[in-house]
View 1 (cartoon, rainbow, N blue to C red):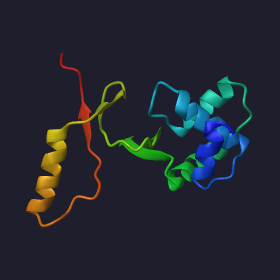
View 2: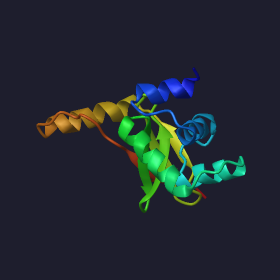
View 3: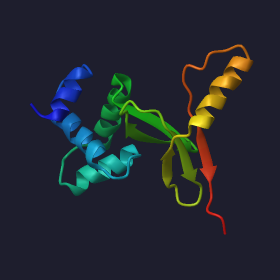
View 4: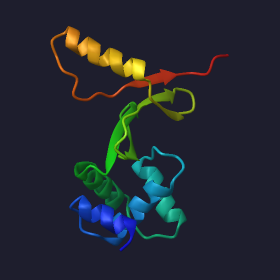
Amino acid sequence: MSDQNVELRKAGLKVTLPRIKILSILENNPEAHLSAEDVYRSLIDAGEDVGLATVYRVLTQFESAGLVTRHNFDGGHSVFELDRGDHHDHMVDVDDGTVIEFTNQEIERLQHEIAEQHGYELVDHSLVLYIRKKK
């Protein structure tokens, strides 16, 4: 059984050809953050006959099953990345849309500290820095 089949079954999803193809694109794409349109274009470029509505539906199913994480970086435009279980934050270049992943233990510590100072326990967070190259 292929890795994609195992992942889909572990997530409680039926193994279908569109799901396998979309999961494969997400796993094998060097650009880790893809929009539904990016996935759709990759399928079309590969000669696959999958509609855009199917791509949206499958990505939503993947999100519900915990296989992908959805981010809304720029004005509500959603991008998806595989959820590999590791926490990281993001920087988004406002000029070209490049997404850079990073981790910083000092930032993580400070976020927990700030939540505690306000009487809360931090359970999850999302940090996005919008950046521009210095001129």
